Length: 261
Image 1 (tube, rainbow, N blue to C red):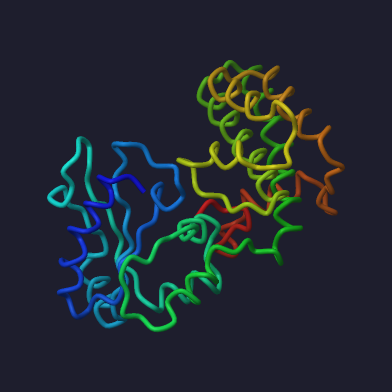
Image 2: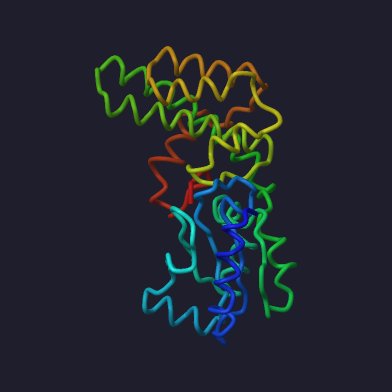
């Protein structure tokens, strides 16, 4: 942690310690993961009582933002109010980004018994769903490769850009799942992909090229790189049916196994 971020946290502590509804202050984001820059903001998670959280939820007061605690260029504090119940839900059935948000999280102050044990249960890869996720991500990759070709054939720049970006996303998520790495949402997606220990050589470079210059040729190179890396298991019903169920028919059950959130 850099000195300017530590100073910010030291100034924050009395503010929250004085609030009887506040149970703990956690530091997350890039600082917790060791990815911060000199001008990075300080991301915090404020754990409050269930009663206070319920009131905040009713009044739409779940976000904290302030520039008054930071004394460095570009510095500010950005935070979310959470409750014990929220943490229990995240540990039980949180999405990958929800779980990833607690990786390396730093409890800087607490009057919450059992907090560290609860926090340790959250950033855990959902192993029970891994096989299905791998099949679903592969189905998305093959569908996106086809769509990129269609977009180029039709001369549709929107479709070309969107499907190329989604091909990078789901190809990358296939590799993250293979490595049992939580998807951290888009801001840190390529960082985690670069850090994945087992991946095709040159995959990140192909992903960056495809994202910057969408094309069928780039999509084909990226997809083939993935297919050559591992003997992936296709969905038993076929990738078109899996794609349809995961993308077009999610309204039927209200959730998606491959969902980003």
